[in-house]
Length: 92
Image 1 (cartoon, rainbow, N blue to C red):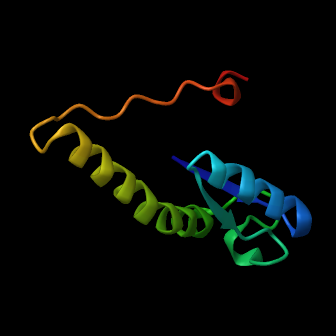
Image 2 (cartoon, one colour; image 1 turned 90 degrees about the vertical axis):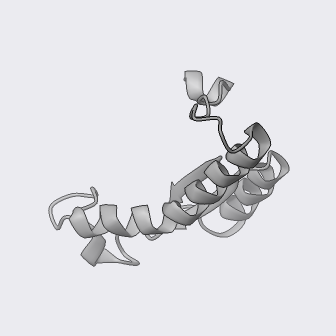
C-alpha cells in the first residue's frame, strides 16, 4: 500500500511517516506548488499533465513492487488483482 502526500512538512511529516511505516505503508512525498510550480496549473492548485506524469513516475516503482509481492505470495498463475484494502480511512 502507498500513501501519497502533498504539503506535509516538518514534525507533521515525521509523525505521518512514522505512523504509516508502523502500518507497513510507504509514504511518497509529492512536491507542493511552491516547490515545483511547473507541475501545477497557474490558475489553481491542481496538477497539470506534467504533474500527473511526475506523480505516476514516483508511484510506479512502489505499485510494481507491491504487485510483485502479491504475485509471489499468491503464486505465479494467480491472475486476480489484489482487493482494495478495507480500512476506516477508506470508508470516510
